[in-house]
Amino acid sequence: MGAASLLVASAACATPAQFAGPGRATFMSQGTIVENYGFDDLGSGFSSLGPVWTAHGVTYQTGDNLVVGTQTNYAPISNVFAYNFWSPVKATVEHTSSQFNLLGFDVGYLGTQSPLSIKVDTNLGSFTVSNIIPSNASQAMNFFGFVAGSGEYFTGFQLSSANGSGSAPVIDNVTLGQQAAAVPEPASLALLGLGFAGMALSRRRRKA
Image (cartoon, rainbow, N blue to C red; front, side, top):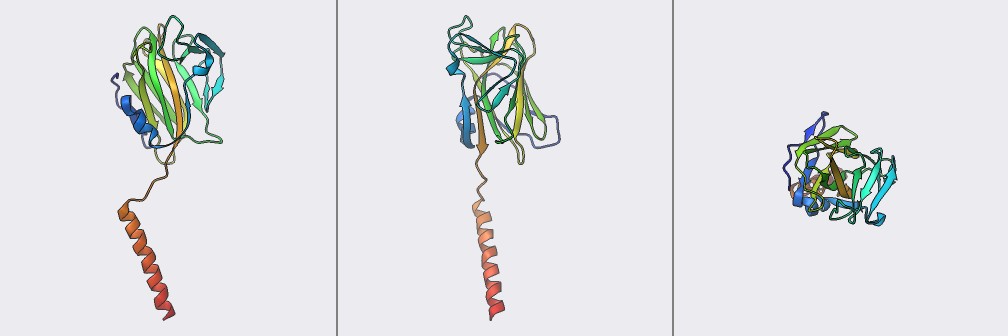
């Protein structure tokens, strides 16, 4: 998998944990996966989707949304989403009826290889992973997943190529989910039990 720099927050809030590369299984175990969409229903050729297109909790606002199928001259290993004018790929994440605090996707490139950056937007700020060296989508894809911090949910994302024209960031298997509720640690449960026991003892004394 390609190297990437640390996630940098542009606002004063908790930075989401990042799972990359072989971490998809770990990422998906963090909660309930609600959407996992891979563009496979759009055929094996080029599919032009217009300037704004919504599917499975994500609205793609790239300007000239395009799905590149496996039978095109680019021959990606699976259907991938791209921008018809190379870079960037832009999208917003549904956050009205649902608030997703798990966000992940497979990342690659078509055309000429170029360092990529991923910008992730939440209700509390923006975060960027820079200097990603992706795989050619005709050979492999690299997974990037994010788990939001407390009180935080995802509102959008953007993938940009450092070299612009001629190098297209592409995504596949866009995954949205909701974290599992935190489970109290055994020590916390024991303290909670002692608290209830103390309350019961206090009530008995009052009755005596």
